[in-house]
Length: 110
Length: 108
Image 1: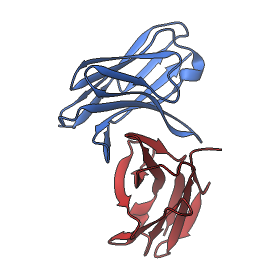
Image 2 (image 1 turned 135 degrees about the horizontal axis):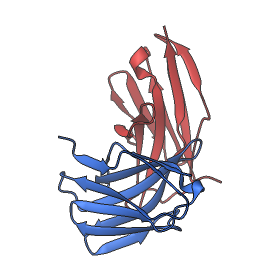
Image 3 (image 1 turned 90 degrees about the vertical axis):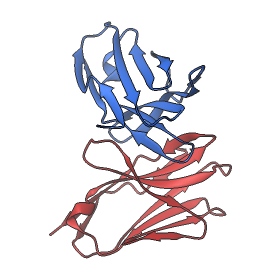
Image 4 (image 1 turned 60 degrees about the vertical axis):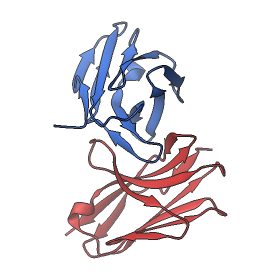
């Protein structure tokens, strides 16, 4: 079984819809992260959490929110999706030194 | 200026070639450094950490120059399976900052 899982793997939605991307990890790490990847821009940090009671904004948090439901679960929400949120989204967990990524969610906002 | 900048690529090389990737970072307080590998739109995976003394893992050699804020990755005897995007990554306060990646294509 994968250490970091993401659901859904692919999602098509319409402008204005609310959607949630979910992430679970079995590695037992306290730290979890959400990134988005766009061609030519690399991975950019959206939100991160160092433990269950800790939530921090990353580089590009506008338009997103997160919830850390448990040590193993960290979900990302788009309250009102817009087309420029079309991207590949990765969840990750890890120590300060190494991060392990989920397989990614491809999101298309029409 | 981006916090982590890499050679734009793509690099197209024949099998057996030696190829070098360069990376610079802007924050001198950066604590640790890595190279990640990402296969076509899959998740990034840690390739190796980078130490000031330089470190080697088989055909891969990584170097760090803190004074110049420069990181490098050398791949010797390239294999077809080395084709991927290589991401230069810097740790700042527990957050990883990624370069945009350099694409490598190894041809027969």
